[in-house]
Length: 293
Image (cartoon, rainbow, N blue to C red; front, side, top):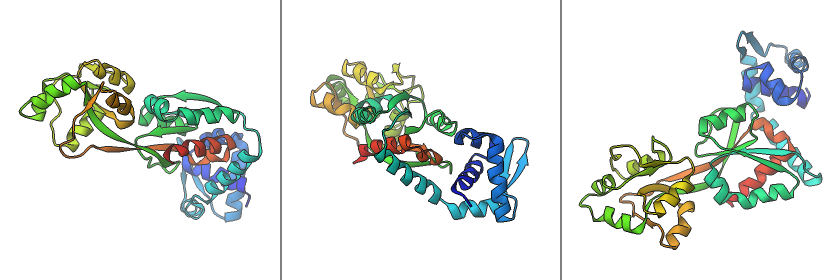
């Protein structure tokens, strides 16, 4: 029972598709089918039932996958890490995540990838889009504020962000002078990531305050733009602490004390379990996890 046959089986099991598994492994579909058929011969039972839209695992496949667990992924990752230490790395790492965190929290680590011989391509997008790109091997690693539940993906916490309600000092004094905090916030322009106001909504819910009526005065998918606008007196917003520290220190921004608590979001590094068999991805993962050190 070869490791290659087991990897082919696991990839088909996770992706529910011979075509997608073959593409991910860089194999022809006949070669992949041969691997699975050989494994079925050794197990003595069918592992997949073929359907028009893919395959479904049999009970024997479920049992085999459960027995393998993450052992194969761990072994391949360890081998790839060893190869990364002993060889000159080449190739491209495709990384996706929030542009503001990549710029503010990861730039020195990305330079290490360059010095190791890798080129880096950076993409952005929301959670669902990033997961889909990982599934389709369009990106190698992604940073998200969520933990994936899909068995094809694994993750590790890379950082935490504490959410702060901030405004220019004069705007914040006006908000704080209102008889009720909700009234003060309603009376000043709100700035947000998008029309749904995810960070604003999270902070207000944590502190028992209703979402202000009306649309945000500004929306921008790069939080650094919101920081610049709020620093110029455009209104108030909610930002991660790592984006606010220097502006607060320079008194361009002030922080409104949270009546209850400031929410804390985890930031996770996410990857396809099978991707760590590539030394360049194993090395990039290890390097980026140093952001949490």
